[in-house]
Length: 194
Image 1 (cartoon, rainbow, N blue to C red):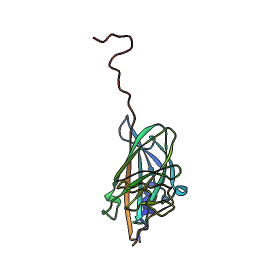
Image 2: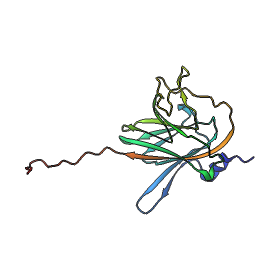
Image 3: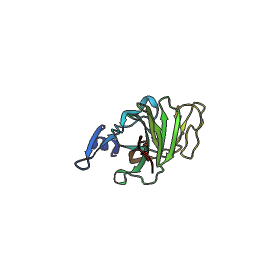
Image 4: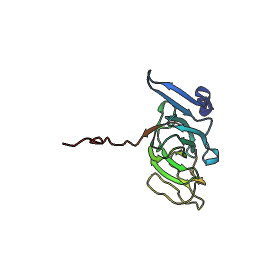
């Protein structure tokens, strides 16, 4: 049986790699190394944003969850959008959910296909991805769901997948940044307004 995760890691490695789009712009991609963990102590990273603008990885089963540690270099609203790579996936039926946690594991935001949040300078946060499983707090309650549910507590586990079927689903998470802009003044100091 072909181990697609090992094949993918062998082909593209588990590292950050730059990609040139044209002469003026470059993108940088973080590639999952073997398998990202599902709890904060086993998260892969740190991934510095906005230096890195794409994360590539894969889920091996419906029970697989990947968690990444990110570090914001500046205050900004970060938007994360996930897309499945159909050329590298053995399954095309998925509802990929994204989850954001702070440094302690408190839930911040979640969404199906995309999620965003405003982070401050030099802030550590975590980005999780699953195919339909929600994170749990220590009471066994859903901590975050992509449908808006947010409970107190920190990330301690994830929901059980039930029947675990083998799956190989390759994904790419685009990271977009919206910085706050200060509106231009209508007049400058010392000038009369007519």
